[in-house]
Length: 259
Image 1: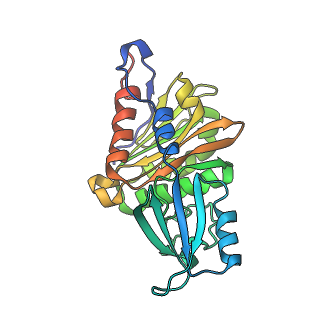
Image 2 (image 1 turned 90 degrees about the vertical axis):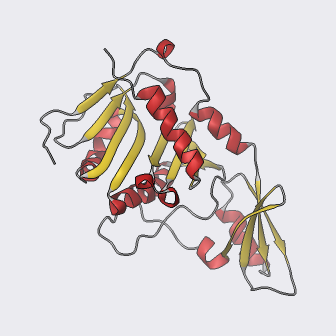
């Protein structure tokens, strides 16, 4: 890899030069409008109560049901009576508190669960970091493709530079960071591209998007907005079409180099 002596910095182009299309906020609203149901089958009241506590910050209805057939203690996620996915309750309730990227670890405990594209509400900083780490870890392990991350402000990007310089050191991985200017652009000697954007959307959004190295099953994204001070509302997704849409939106809206 050729060493850089100066960071690659892309500054914002005037919004009037950009095409009009759905924003990240509108994408989040679309997911928010489709509430899902999590049904716990053949589980006791205590377990169902634990599920309600676990997902109290999600746009999700939790209910219980008993059947004469089928395994005990499993959940089914549905949307408007349409099956989405199923999982064991043990997996869903597993403790997931690790917020440190374990890039060399053989076993990484994910924070993101099976509830793909289910809205979460009121996530704090630690929860957002934990969710982001899984996507960063996937990009590190595959070591190719594109990773795009929004940090809101340069002062927030600064403390994360060690992680993102390490990610950018992967020869096959193209890494982009987005932030509004409130501090100096962090210096580095890696292939990390920093997009400095004077956009309210960038100031208010937290996102981590990975294109899976071009492989659909590896694509994933976390998209959220700060609606209250340091409290985030959004969703994560493994749907390749949604991931592709977010990447296309970022490239079209913030990928132009100012003249």
